[in-house]
Image (cartoon, rainbow, N blue to C red; front, side):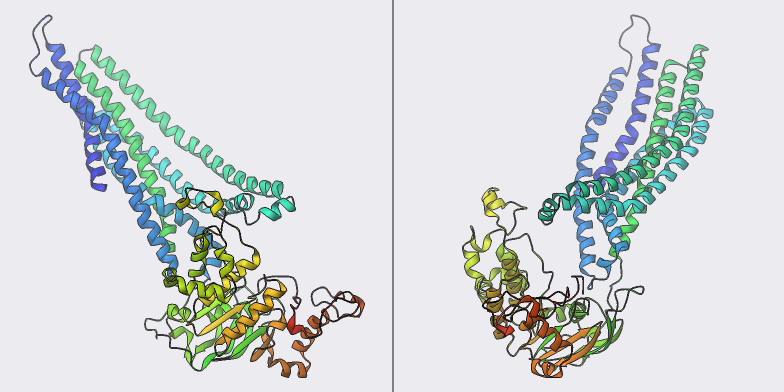
Length: 626
């Protein structure tokens, strides 16, 4: 496609000059013919040449346009594949939580699609314009050398103006990308399903619309200021060029009146002056587009060449099956040099084949520990080891392949039920027996089989299933608890994993379902290395070791009975939760850990004092990333 465009550029660059000279020859032959005389010699050949040039000029743009479209599609596929390969090579989360990187990523997605094709098209457009200009400048030199010099001088301010504007436009794209991202964010809140309930219940539509239009207006104001500057900067050189062309035409007509130029010379002169001006404008414009594209393409290159956000040594070890356990030694961590410490000198051992529960108030560092165990981050100080081998010396994909996790903020993929479960272990996509076994393990199989298309039912109303001809009834919405089971099934699909991490695995379930799921999870955890995080202490009391975190430090650890006997943090929190389920008036109940107000159930409510049989209330401060 590039070669086809290059050939088209050469032909398109030569065609106007050839047409001008053929027109001159035709006029000269006609002017020299005797009145009423016979056919002028060679006139038919000239006319045939003009006809061919006209046909080529008419058809060529369509051919070049097709080649440009094919090139753009090919480059888009290539650039997007390269960009997302580069993103997939980032093993951690640090880049994705960096606003500056997010800005660059948005610019990279845009420039990666457009900039390479624009650079190719602009380069070939410049070559075409240059060929045309060289041909016409040569014609002017033969007729009026001084005019060629004046046009060359007039081109200097035009080039300066266009390059200045292209550089300013590239800076504008960088400076407004935050506003563009925010505008897209507010638009998604207004139009998406995820926030639709709260937007309508709380009457947020006008507020979010105002925010969206405010960001859009800010972008438009910045663009308008640039457009006005461009009008001023480009207007003067354009006016100067027009004055030069007009002066040249006056001179040519005057020279023809004095007999110094023939009719053919006038035709070539007029075509050459207009052609030079048009080719110069096209040349400068394409150069400016290429210049701006190169400046924006720098963001694309910055993303695809971004170094890994985790230390990856040249030689790494394969990850063996976990035999001894995972050890954290004096682990300190914070999310940035200017951020507070989240973990402060944590020492912790997760023995192989045992269940370790992490409990503590919100912000204590529990979920951050999960991120370190999955090696989404490396500790700022200290180390993690897998059977005595430092995490940094292990293959990252091999390590994660031995971990099954249910995250607290698990994903709702707008895919089919089959795909939603199979994403936990992609080879299972073609193994229905494994999928149904995982679904049965969390009591989800019967729910899925009752869906319109069973496991092939789309779990979204955002898209239509093309296999059903766009029938909107094929997509369904699950409840929060059903999605929780989907996430559990996704994790349990990795039945050969060495480490099972469950971060609030039952937060979306009702009391009966939660009790049932925890019974099933206890069976699945038996003899398996597990990390369990839950605010509901009834769910963690059967763990082999319970670790209590407070302000990023381990303040207690031991079995449930040991910690209760110690009467420390864990015992206090457990009694707070248990108090809410004892028979008695609210005034007799201990204060709620979040509000400090009395909790409890009305007198006579059938509850038991054994909190393990029920769902404990959450404790902690207001919900925030931990």
